[in-house]
Structure formats: C-alpha cells, structure tokens
Picture (tube, rainbow, N blue to C red):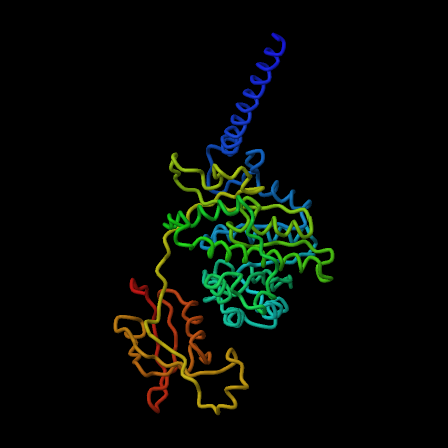
Length: 426
C-alpha cells in the first residue's frame, strides 16, 4: 500500500515538474528570441536573426547561393530600404550569372504585357508609369524605384506583376470573397485564412491603427480577407512563373512590403507549400526609440516565430522635402471625335487637350501670368496630350528650374516661361 502511495506521489511530482517545465519553456522562448537579437543596433547593421550575429553584406550575399528565391521586405516610403533592394538585385544577378527574374508587388497582374515591353526596352519610363497607372495603383515615389527599374531594363530581366488591382481589392473588401461573382472567383487561387499566427499579427496591425473593437465592427474580417487574397495571389504569381518553361534555371527575387514576409507566414509560406524550393527572407527594420512596455516590433510576444532570416537596420526617413508645383487645377478636355471613334479607341491611347480650370496667383503658374481657360499645348517642346503628361513633366523639376510652356488662349498661341519655386501649399 505504501509503495502504491509513493508511486502515486511520484507521478504527481513528475507531472507537476513537467507542467512547470513547459511553462518555463514558453517564457524562455519569448525572452530568448529577443535576447538573441543584439541589444545595440545601428543604422546599416545586418543581423542574422537565428544567431543574433551582425554580419557584412558580403557575408549575407554568400547565403544567396543556397536559395532559389530571395524575398526582400521593403518599407515603401524609405529610401534606404530601396537601396538595399538594388544592392541585393545587383549581387543576386551577378551570382546567378544573369539567370534571374523578379516579382514585384508594385505592379498588378493585368499590366504584365506593359512590364514585358519595359524589359524589352520598347516603352519609355513615362509610358510605363502611365500605362500601369502607377500613381493610383501604387502611389509611392517612383524615384525610390527608378534605379531598380533602370537596371531591370538595361539587363532585360523578366519582371512578374504579382498582385490584383486596387479596384478588385476594394470589391473584396466590400463583398468578401464569398460575395464575388463566379467569374471573379475564377481569377483567384484558393485563399487561405486559417493561419492562427498570421491572424494574430494582422489583428495587431489593425489595432495599432486605432481599431480597438475589431470584432464588433466586423472590419477585421474584411481587412483580413483582402490581406490573404493579396498574399495568395502574389504567391500564386510566383509559383506559376517558377513552374513555367521560362523559369528553367532561373533564380527569383521578390520585392514586397515587409508585412507580407515577416514571420514567413505571408507570401513565403504560401509559395513554399506549392514548390518546396529553398528561400530566404531579408526584412527591413526602421530603427526607433522603443517603449519598454510594448513588444519589440520584430518580436511579438504571442508569435513564437523568427521574423526573418536576416534583418537590415535602416534609419527613419527624414521629413519629406517640399516639392515644386505648377499651381494649377487641370483636366482632360477630349478632342472633337465621332462617337464611333471613341468606341474603337482604347482610353489609354486617347489624346486630349489639357485645360486649366484655375490658377493660384501665388504659384509659379500664377507668377508667370497663366490663366484659367488656357490650354497647354507643350512643355519644353514636348507635346501635352493628357493630364498625366503635365504631372510627369513637373515631377522632373526642382526649385529654380524653368519650363517653357506653350499655351492656347482663345485663338492665340503663346509661349510662357515658368520658374519653379518651393511652396508650402499643396
């Protein structure tokens, strides 16, 4: 009887020790993940997350050889983040002997043909931005991507447009995936919304933007479905390309927002399920002062996963510099056309007159004497056929630059010299 009691007591003790050990292990995992990351980091540091070692870019590049896919998670508005992308692009291109393709979140799948033309040197930068509707579909400063896109064109590197259009995303946010038409659903791969940690991460993101009561509002589910759709569509774009004849022998580089690759559960995990190809992730981290009461941005306490294979530390961007503006409100004024011609002509190919609806008196245009009702014919000798032409031209200017603008005022053509200066007003 005594032996049975001792045995029973021993079992209780072992079980109790086991429970205590598990609890400690969970706490240790949370703590050690952060302790493993260097306590002191500076802008420019590259950290191998699994070991916490700071390494050089050359040491990072040595790991490229073992990967078929490299994901670089960018901060869209951070110039240093894009400089890292360019550095990785050049090194990966060299190490793959030019057998490289690139997937870019910035471009939408319906624009694949435009990207192919860019790669083949068939269109200008202005036509690329106009035809892919860059300002609406992406909206971030193209100058951050310019050197990347120039390198792609100069070396004829294939680019895969990865994501759905903004309009389609809005439709999903409004209707949900179940509310889509059969035709719309057919354009999508299977959408996985079952990843527990992925859901936790995105709940954090939404709550950090002031949506504390996400369950009651129903906002989260719509938000989550759109996020998962983006990531499954991008993963599908990558997987389809890599299984195609064009991808034979090619390595693949992905430029995507950091939130889509952090903890691996966004795009990388979805791609890996389909092809099991070796990959690595490089995350960009903007160094900032941390609140000790909050979780570290890279190490969420309730997500026991490594945020990335490597982390590059960059500084927070400086406040945006004031850009020069022309100081006019303009719109497309369709040329006189027959209804039949309008039906036949693609909207992107149509030509317009660009008319000034209003001119701000204290702006470069106002100082130069431009007036409401003036029609812009050319700028610096280049014909103006649409509002985008004016926007693109002004973006090339800086304070102190001049622009020769040919206008039609009534029936009179005249040329006006406009000098640009910085303005505090938008």
